[in-house]
Image (tube, rainbow, N blue to C red; front, top):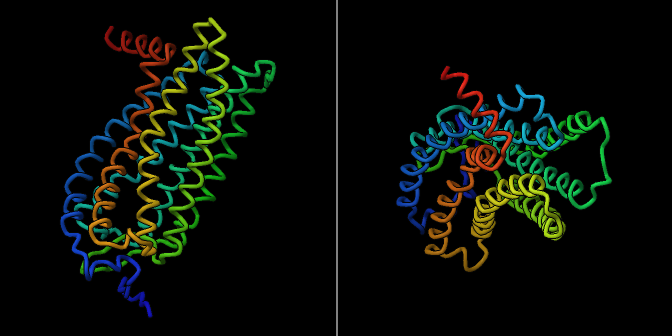
Length: 313
């Protein structure tokens, strides 16, 4: 029976392999690499995404439906970034920040994860409609449609993150406090939920871009190519970062469920190492999107150059 007194848990499901599988080296690897890498990601994400928001808010010429979604994607990246300092702290000293903070940080992570996926997907669908079906115009109410769609996306993302708010707890295991799901069922469901959303988004985006590429091969519009290149670059970076991570959390779920051969110690350790590396890559997506806004988006470069010249004068 589990006890909740002072976070004392008889938590066999947390890592049932510890008795026969020593993962000290894996944990040490995570405690060294994660804080260092996350510190760089946090700094770059704050600078880049805040700069994107400033440009989008200040210049009316950027208030298109696409850029409305870019604005909310930048907000999503900042929401996601908010949780990274806490994870870095956790890897250094364990989770000593209390259960409320544990729940809040997990909620922020999942809300940022789901909103990023959906905003990228809706941006791609919008680009698909503009390029492949140019007659499907939203008229003069584009900005209103953008606000409504963004509100729905945020609502759905927050709703999808609610289980993490309800079922994550601080658990004591081998003398160390952890912030995690207190039940293997919810932990597995969470991982599979991420996999399902990621896979559906991949199918939608792949379909849209296959048709977009077919269309632009027949067009000589330079401006259209630039716009497609911007959205395409953001999507590629997202999937290159998140696909390996989703693969690893799926494999870890199989290990937690003791599915052969992932119940073997050597394979389990290899999966954990892979998880740490892929998580570092995936979590860096929040600082990479602004790079593409600046270097691929002509309007962003133009306005940023103006801002820089005004500051220097």
